[in-house]
Image (tube, rainbow over all chains, first blue to last red):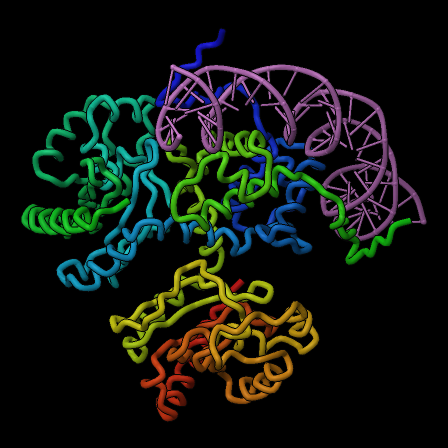
Length: 264
Length: 264
DNA sequence: AGACAGCGTTCCGTATATGGAACGATCAGT
DNA sequence: ACTGATCGTTCCATATACGGAACGCTGTCT
């Protein structure tokens, strides 16, 4: 008798069993086309995904018929169909629109780039970005992912989790550092967590990109679990201690106000 | 011998043959979950998509493993994974960022809601929106779709197509009107096209929503084909003839400048 | 308690989706 | 012209993904 742990009357699906390989391949094809900057043909996709050519062909033609892909003589490319999915995802909670509205009203951060992101496993995903007019040398794309341990919002959100859950998320091998400043390992990270918890906001001091400093604060859901985070980005020359303290207070305040807007 | 028309050395895939049903079902499940405002379970999905329960289960579990869906006791829901796809789609051309940058610099439209959209078959898909602080009573969601014949950007883009291609796109039964103003049929639309072509911009006079007026101009690609369109939205009380003429000229100018930024 | 209806999950025979091989067309190099 | 490489597409035997039926469980009725 296999070990079927059951939770709340709901069995656990057996993750070892290969189910619906075509569905997995569909996703891999979409991921590949999204990662590529130009259209890709059947052979090229088959080669780099290691899927038989005729299978790739069958799936791609089906995706063209459903309107998810465009097909032209140079190959397949993403259509606007996927915007439905992301639009639905982003508008499920009013988080993004509240973020934009709040920043439009509050002029104190007008000169800084401010981002909204959420935690997904050990990564942060950027949901929204309000750019400043000043260039930062780094652009946050919506949908972009970064290792949570190096980003300000990631640090802020991880800090709000119980230690056990945090260790679970970070149990994979430590992500290769981006810069010399990137926090070395889990032990050093746990030391930092105490600081972030105490002061309410977390700091990325050039851990993503040399010369860029970000201050991040967590947005908490009903049970106190972090559902998202906001961060303000600046160059290291702007990040004087006094300014950091001021701005840290401001994003904590904004994050708190967003938390109170009862986000799903 | 079947009728295999061939174009440019590339055979046409036979669209009658059912290929990769699991891929099509994957897309339908994603569409359904995106359309639903709350998580959906296996049985619910199976019922409303008319797919066997065990097949839905297999696909959904696969999608959870690939990280496209989240699973919790209340059902499946979209994860942030799809943001990768839309982010890649939106950033393939620099259209969206140019749109934002241009509007940020040019203050003349600061008090109006401005949208960017593209044509997909007989619909327009909204790619970006710069909201004004004044409420409009209508919110443009990124990824939202509207019938092209009723929207200002759709009218503007369709006007730039050769008549034959336009008739092809609009050959399906005419979309049910949204308001009393919605253009009645293809014949009336073709009459309007002459006007839009002559004046350079198209007008939606309350055809989407009573009391909302939009002026749309086409953004043209290298060969003069419309690749996108921008529109400015206002209430009908703001839309006095003089204002319309002024604003129409401004969006034509902006659309022309975006066209010159050689958009893919 | 008992019956029932709903859920998520598993099982296994079989209909069928798959993939290796072949096809025709194109293009580059000779 | 003639290769040969590579492209998108088709074909069909067969490995396998699918789906109807059953299972265990929870909650809600009499």
